[in-house]
Image (cartoon, rainbow, N blue to C red; front, side):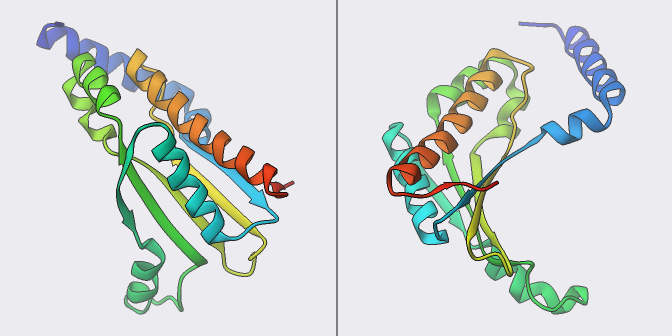
Amino acid sequence: MPSDRGKRWRRRLLALACCLSGVAAAAEDVVAERLAGTDFRTVHELLVESIEAEGLRVREVIPFNAMLERTAPAFGRVGSPFAEAEIVQFCSSALAWQMLGEDPEQIALCPMSIAVFVPRGEAAVVTLVYRSPGQASAGRLAAGRLLRRLLDQVGEALRQRGGQPAQ
């Protein structure tokens, strides 16, 4: 296990790398997949099925659009920018233990989540999006592969039903 001094040094190097990478890092921290020829409910169901097919359990479905609609007036807004939006949270205990063994601060990466949304006025396009856990450790790489695999599984199931990725 690294010493506190080693952890501080590693954090400083990581911070420096983030500063030097600037905009490139910001562009890579969110991964999105736009799906056409489908609807929100179908994509939501396919996502839950994909999570469960990995032997995982959905822990929470956050009705994000409802929160935006409810709070819009307090921020001088009229409604949400989404027609529909939910955040699906789940956890892999195997990945959690791996990441925590690497660095207990990686608890911040648990649970994992994938958002599903339809922008207002674009009913024919559903977007899946997640925050990349990064590549700083083997556990983070494995978490990233799981998240990517889930999006790929949803896309493949949708293609089998006649849908397709958006252009």
